[in-house]
Structure formats: structure tokens, C-alpha cells
Image (tube, rainbow, N blue to C red; front, side, top):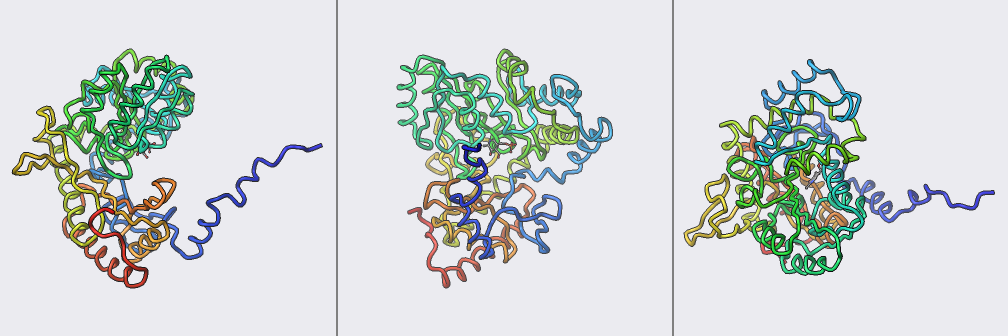
Length: 439
Ligand SMILES: Cc1ncc(COP(=O)(O)O)c(C=O)c1O
């Protein structure tokens, strides 16, 4: 006798199905489009060339000869896969070299390499935190951070995005929770492209005796004189307990890492289930990440960092001039510890320092309008990413544009002209888009 309901019932008539069906029918679904060329500044998608403004390939290293060779040599030396966990048969010398070089880059005692960035967060938070602990997260943190927190069953205390007063309130409340306290923030937020005020966050964590972990997925290989990330740029690398990063963005591969003290990293090597109970990344991925890291740390690294950040400023300014709502250049703290000489940092006559990260979101507001605008841009030869609710708050739909160091000016200007033309046609049919000042 069957009394239970079908667990698959939820896949029919769920709350996203109607929107999905309508978007598919209207031909404006911005997801799952197929790339049929290498990940370059201009790609081929579905039979046409499109300017790629929707990748995380910030340094453009996926097509770099040295990185391709790193992948190729690893493939030929170690084969297509390792068929086992790092603990057992899945560790090759490239893993150990990569971990050592990441630790040098991050200036930490040790580092551990996971098969993906998502697993790095899951396997760190789910292991270091337990039901008696408290984890305080920025509401804009990446989903993999939230997944790690949920897995740990620690008490979760989210605070409003980048609001230090709210963070302090949570730190104060956590004093009464009775366990250890960890604060986790993104260094650069993946949708908005803004930077966490790590100097003030460090100060608060120190005052309240909390540990701090920073997700540098979009900061490592982008910010700081050595490209070591947001903590380096803001001069607080030695005050952050754990720094996580991925190989799937600037490092042109796939995989993730966590860098910190030897005792914590070694504990993860023995206890982290997302590290132990999964196959090690394929050799080509490890070889590519190592080769890309070596490019970033070579004399060729800083000019690449400078180029991606100059391109970001150019794209932001160009979109702003053409009447789109984009973020203002990010103000950096005035303290001496901030690396004023790092690539991309601008200092005004009044001494104010700003930077524009390679993530340049264009606010649209309405979900449907964002999907229509995405389609118009796609048809005109520009690919961007689309973030709709629940990835962003209701009414906060945005087109997430991002640049690469290898975009040349002519290509970026062509994309900007396309944006202007599409905006004009779009507004005459669908009404105004938000103006240059944020509502
Ligand atoms: C901030 C942040 N953290 C973690 C991840 C997960 O990294 P990966 O895609 O390498 O698994 C991502 C990527 O989507 C990210 O943007």
C-alpha cells in the first residue's frame, strides 16, 4: 500500500516553470547557449560571432600558449584522469607544486587544492564549523559559501551586503552563542563587482575575537600588485585567517584552493569530506592552473592585471556615458596600507583612491526587460550574463558584463556602440531603461 507522495512531484508545476516556459517561447531565455569556439574575447555561439562580455576569463589566459602547454604536458605525462581521491591514488607532483606556489603567492604557511572552487568552500566551511559554532556571512556571498555553512549546521547569521554596522551587530550577538565565530565574505562580489571593506572587517573581527575567511574567486589574479587579491590590495593579507580562490576565473582552468596556516590546512587534508571523497581534478586542469599561476607571478603578470583593470574602467565609463546605470568606481580606504601603486588604482587630485573591478553590472530592474535586452544584445553580437531574481533581489535584475585583459579597444568600442544602438531601439519599443544615476 502506497501512502507517500512522489518525491518527483515538485519537478512539475514549480514556481520557475511558467517563467521558464514563457521565456523559452518568446526566445529570450538567456541561459544554456552553446559556445562552439575557444573562450576568447570574441567567440562563436550558435552560428554567429559574439563579443564575449560574459566570462570570468579575466586575464584571457585560456588561450595562452604557456597555459595550453601546461595542460598538454600534464595530459601526456599523467593521462586523462587520476581516477581517485587526493588521499589515495590522486596526487601527482603538479598538485604539490601548485599548493606550494599558491602558499608563496598568498604568503601563507600552506595551501590545499580541491577539484572545484565550490568544493573548496564546501569542504572548508563544512569541516571547520560545527553545530555549536556561529558563521556570519554577507548576504551577497556566493552560493557555495552558503552551501558550506548549511552543511556545517553552524548557526548562520547573515548581514546586509557590505554594511559594517550590521556585521558588528551580528558579531555582538554571536558573543552569546557560545561557540567559535567565523566571518566569511567575498573579496570581490561576483554579481555587483564591488569590494568588501576588508580593512574594517579585519578590525571588527579582531575586536570581537572572530576568525575571518575571504573568498578571492574574483579577486585573485585581478587585484593587488602581485595579483594576490583583495586582501593584498587593501594591505590586510596577514590579518585574514583563510583565503579561498578558484582556478576557474583568472587562472584559466578548473579547481579551487584554500590558503592559511599549516595546522588548519593540514586538518582539512585529513577531515574535509569534499576533499577526501571526490576524485582529484584531471591532470590537464592542474597543469593549466599551475602554468597560469606562473604567468601571473612572472614579470608578464602585472601588465596583464593593469590591462584587465584599464579595460574595466573603459567599459564602465563607456556604458555610463551612453546612459546606462553602472556602479560608480569603488572608493578604497584612505589608509597607507592600501597599495596605491597596484594596477588599476586611480588617485584623484583630492587624494581619493578608486578602482573599477572587471565585473561591470548594468542595472535593468525588471526581470522581463533584462531578458529582452539580453536577447537584443545577443542578436546584435554581444554576449553578456543575466542575473534575475532570486540571484539578485526582486526588481534588481542586471546584465553582468565583464572584461578580459585580451579585449582590445576596438572590440570594446564596438561592444559599446552596440549597447548604445540596442538601447535606442529597445527604449523606443519597451520604454526607458534606468538612467545613469542609480535609482
Ligand atoms: C565568489 C565565488 N566563490 C566560489 C565559486 C565557485 O568556484 P568554481 O566555479 O570554481 O567551483 C565561484 C564561482 O562561481 C564564485 O564566484
